[in-house]
Image 1: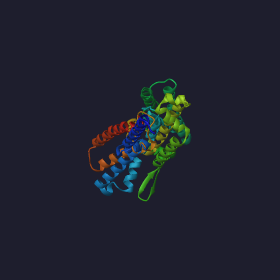
Image 2: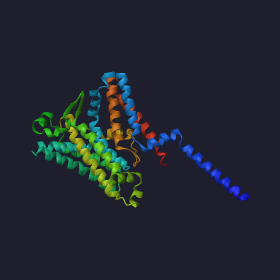
Image 3: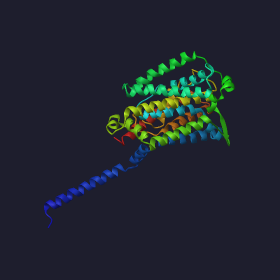
Image 4: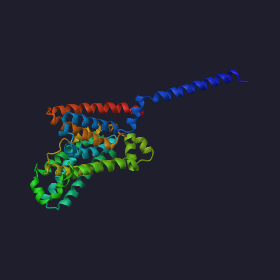
Length: 355
């Protein structure tokens, strides 16, 4: 026959089961499900914001905005920011930040132009030299961060000044005009070449930006290197203890970031037609803006590089939409500022899932 002790143990087990059931029910609430979905798919929020923005401006402006030409014009306008944002995303995923991306981009484009027109080097070779310079700049940043263990913010703040000064000193503030490039070295303007599909107008730069995001997204999700990038950003010490070579991973990330910025410099020549040492000065802030709005956590280890593309497109949609509405340009900065703060707030809320 069951004793009092048996009845007591049975009662305790029932209460524990009820407690577990209550906990599971609480965790499975609608709000928690949304929070978990956003944690698993970080690019979902910027995608929703992008679609809503397109619909709202489409309703307000009609065919002036909601047309193949206007929508692909946005892609053309954000192609430089989108490429640089991809580079910035890689660094931020490792819990770093790169304030020198714009300077690397411009310096690389200046090297391509000056090597071609000052030294008479064949344009394809000059382009390769520009890409090598961008990669070397990234290596310097990565070495200082990983080997010397200096803070990424301070390192890239200093290298931004160094690369910018080098750019001005080397180029002597000389602009190589579009007519000269078109006549002697059209390959420098390759990313600006346009082609039409229906009413939509694309450029090689837009195709490169989309292809770059797709390739990097697949690499980060499907390769060991990509998993190492996320692991370093999440907890570098834990990653080191689990066998990840943190120094090598960081150096490779900064080198790849520098290379991508050099490609952005090549695309910049195609976009503006000329080689100008004063162009692209705001790419640093614009790339960080796109990354933050795109849902990539500034704390590292979480986010999708596809989100950085969505973030850049959101900025482009607001810029074009407000311009077509005849609004003051300052309203663009206002709304982008609101989106940045909202994105960080959402990121903090989502991070509670993993806490």
